[in-house]
Length: 462
Image 1 (cartoon, rainbow, N blue to C red):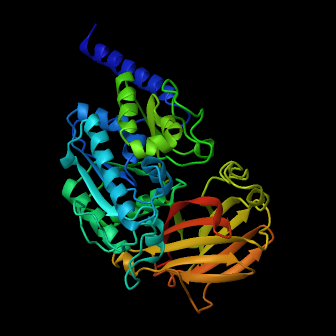
Image 2 (cartoon, rainbow, N blue to C red):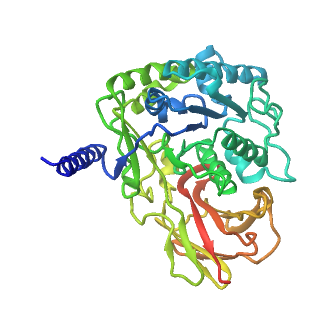
Image 3 (cartoon, one colour):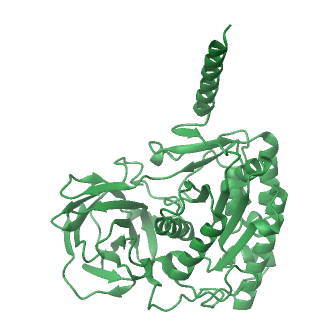
């Protein structure tokens, strides 16, 4: 047999093997490969997320002698319920919360050492646990720094942090991420998912998105978000290491990537996860669900909007994605008031961005809706760009900019029977090239439904 024939057979065999592997990864999942030339950066909202989402991937990268760095956005110092179980009494004093933050840092060091990472490969930013989405929404530029709920501080309090004493403000978080990206120059970034139900997880994705936009032309890494907090997922529950992690049915039509783990890597992931003792003792039955034969990563593509183009769906138009079935953790009263976000669209019209939302049923008087529209353009600091939140609640409509009510009527808000139409001049959004948007419904302070953050690429008329 000639050389070319042997090569053809080898190529066909490899293609068949890859196809078989992809078929095993689950619905919509493609093969994720770590290459010898890669540089892997794992961005974790809290200590334990690095193991939950990427514990096996870290092992696979290190086995190929690929450089790996893990960056923790927070030290996880606001999980008072797990702290109470760990200490045997409520943790309410700021000094006690800070001490628990240090405990969680030490747990991360121990867990990641098991995976093969040295302390030098770990970076702790020390920003406020359970405060990052509020920083993202409101604490920029001339706004004051956020005060943490439990620690009661307004700046990074940890002496071993990457940027000690950094104020709890958006530009500080963004600046730290950009410096780390330029220092390490990753080729692959693993970060929390924009559909994650935990606000710190969503915030880290958003800060990372903006940081990479700012560094466009200097870095072009592949980004692989991992999902941790999502209603009724993954299934089945419990420790089932022989099972595969599959995408939530809500996002099964999106592009997902999967990497298969060897049995020894699955076992070591579980051991490392148990090193996060404060969290494992509190909710180990939840954490164990992520110890499986594979790890899963997926993202949403940017939605392209062109001048005078037709209406574009922002999210998949499926009843499941709308979360029309209330989450189990809601009370009977909250379930009775539940209003789901069924569909979102966007288009450009006459120099305005128009966003529509269809609800699963009409908004009751006590149920509110908030629509976020944050503008971005590369030639203006993101801290100075408008960040609008349009709220429909208490029988009125309001437009807030970084938490402050705006006294202008440029934003057109049309309430409909089962929806709302919002038209915002692009100039009001800072004439952006991109817009980050999300929506949610709520009852008082209780979130009912949450639409994933999505990026709109805006190309207005010349």
